[in-house]
Length: 207
Image 1 (cartoon, helix red, strand yellow):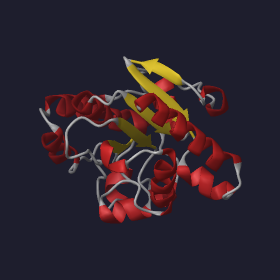
Image 2: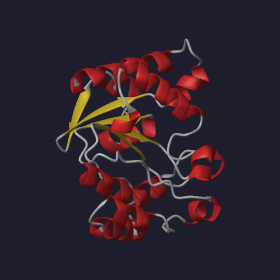
Image 3: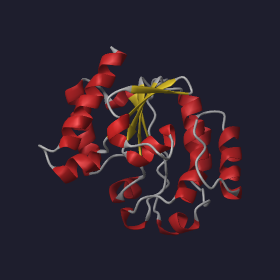
């Protein structure tokens, strides 16, 4: 897997703690008090660890960028407007959120919903890497450019990466638009149509 930029001592410590977690519950308990990113730790309400299906291994994983205001308040991923649209498009594509792991590359809300900084992505990467190891989803849907770059590398161009699976550490990784882009460009915009098309294609590989 592509190593994130600016891997520092705090990132190394997160990776060490995450690797020691033997199951999902242990990992979640270790992640919730994380203070590797002082600015994020000072402004967040919750570390949004993510959701994993109750029945064991997920059929697929959805990996977004970072929590927003609703996620920070509730401690759950994709529960605001983006999450509502994501749920709708998943259903239209024939996918069930209950069968998915729902994660983010950064677990704390950046102030003002800004894009996570490279050191923040690097420090949080240990949590996500261990989540993927423990859950072992065969397919990952990377939602938005930040997530796509985490899996496919810093020079990733979303328009070029979309529409096909990329083999990353034995997993099929699909890069697509973030639901927030679909909201921003409206119901008839290209991001919404592209996101639905990609989710439908993913569903076809899981059938």
